[in-house]
Length: 273
Image 1 (tube, rainbow, N blue to C red):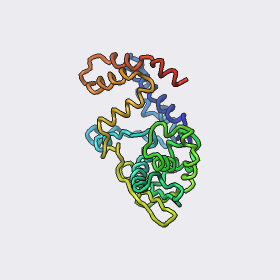
Image 2 (tube, helix red, strand yellow):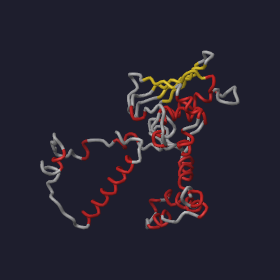
Image 3 (cartoon, helix red, strand yellow):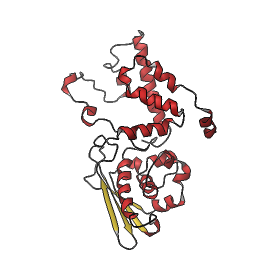
Image 4 (spheres, rainbow, N blue to C red):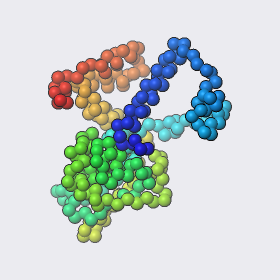
């Protein structure tokens, strides 16, 4: 877990996927090896002190997790557990600004997050974009201050705003015994206590984007546009959406890969320089 919230973790995942595909293609082309590599102690067993291979169960003897819970599409790019925090914080914010023009940050005495005990997402004062994406505390503060979280919310100048650092210092964590780190059952409860004694509390059991509360097709497309338009022309992005929507009818996938390989328009390139 030491590499969580660093660039190394996603690099390893992508590298492993690449090597897996490469191995599959080589096998398809006829490359052969020892067929007992999974069973022999000198095969994969050499890397495990307690290697005990067993016969694979019948395909029908177990259920697949994705058959039960489906897929979650995140509304913003951060650790999944932080999305419960954002959802609860958004609800509290609505209460706090109901009768005010601005969020009363100066009147906040403390902010309590009741969340699972997940240490690598417990980052009281994140110092980088990657740490902010893995911080219960930062996501709560960003949502309270801004009312929304986007890709730019994790840029370093946003993370280091004085008002954000001030709010981070007011956050306390509590870990209720019934709130376990399980994406199917965890929840977040947030309480904001003001200096006048008023307390505002909200709870999220299922955030928008969870498999129990999936993103609408419209919001999913908007998320794709917001990300893809950073590198591709608007016309290409709309064409990609159209193709993916009808992927089952696509006879030649090269149409898709050709669009993805298109060079970025000059105006997009100039913005990135």
